[in-house]
Length: 122
Image (tube, rainbow, N blue to C red; front, side):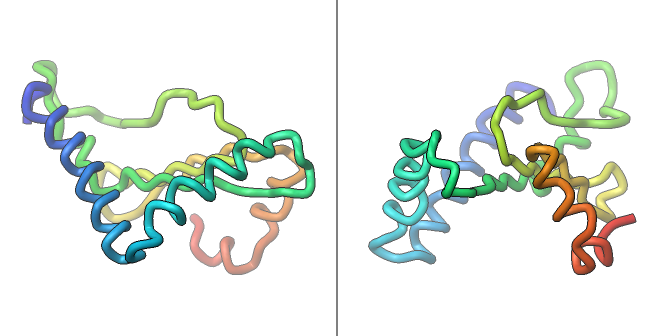
């Protein structure tokens, strides 16, 4: 798949995903997905609020894209300066998930020592 076809596919996939989420969540979907997140973001300095943003790019097929110099050997996301952010990407072999985790150092302790999470990692 070349860049000309990949960009609209990616955009349409994101739109469909948002639409599917709104359909699943019903008439309150927009509030649940966006307005609550906006309220939390507005309280950015409030240390009593802890939130983590997840984004799943595992089904976008980044390893299938060929921009003219062959398919990628490895893909990753750009450095996204968002605190408490977790991005999920599929592996090249499509047999697992990579989790790119950006948390404060003191919060990483909980992730690194959680028994349930450890069972899922290699």
